[in-house]
Image 1 (tube, rainbow, N blue to C red):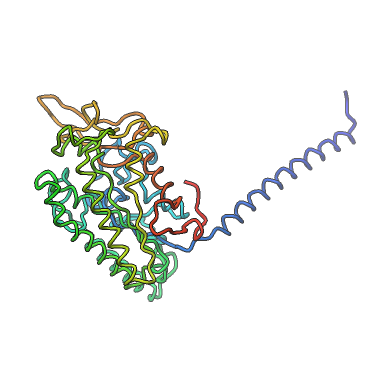
Image 2: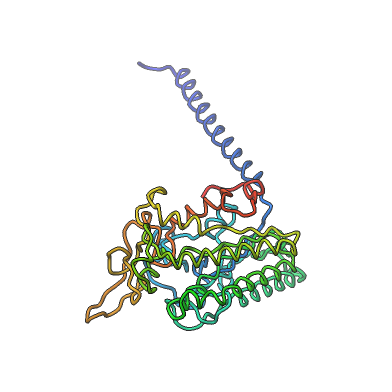
Length: 397
């Protein structure tokens, strides 16, 4: 059928009209989305994190050479200074609040500290100079050092704000320190570093000093304006593949889930002391939100019932050597190689870390970290209750 020139022009005009209407609809949808983002609120402007390798984002590797793959294989696709195949709890917390991932305080080039800084560094301790059971030498970045770094950061922010050059800075405003979450996830290395040598009873003798040091650090931050503190308790180390292999025990000490009873019970004792200390501190710091975060309960359930969370393996490392129940060899860590009995062996990663709780026998996978962060943000593991979902419009993670 042949169309007249008039019909052709009408048809072309109709096409243009429908195309413009489609563009307009898409534009309106984008404007609505941007409006929602603009309206999103959060009472907090930053996160300052204190910890060890469980929540570091590159502090240790800013000072020492980075590891090779397979670290970072799931998300970053390269080593990212995280002891995992991907993101950790502090990454997901920042993402939920709408912040970029926290840069390590020690990173000298390219850091953006407008939404906080990460002082966590691998092998760090609260109190003891000796570090992890699996890492020799001394810890250069104890909690006291991390606190001094925080104080120095605050001083420099205030000095910079007083200077005439203020544009284009990647620093926060000086009032950020009263509008931040101060996150603590540290103490595991204090607990475990001497377990093999002095046993549980020996370690218990100095655990009150570990808790008192955390309490003192919180008071120091409170004194310069910090008001909201998340304090994560210790993990059930008796379920970690590394400790199941390394720590002395007998078959009667293994529970029905394959975890070490005596070591997990000792962790519970520590966590109870930590909670009691925070309860007492609230009387002295009336304006503080001192939140005990029961990270232990979440991770313990993950180790015991991985399939309930869509995972497959509990106390078994994804990245390790030896296979078997734990796939962990204390002589060859994830990604490393070594000559054993005349053979050059390498601790390699599994192809499906999303099925594992444990990444390398000591740290969690991205999948486990995501599950734990979602549970924390749900509010069920805050004591006392803390309405973070009311104080902030949480972003999906």
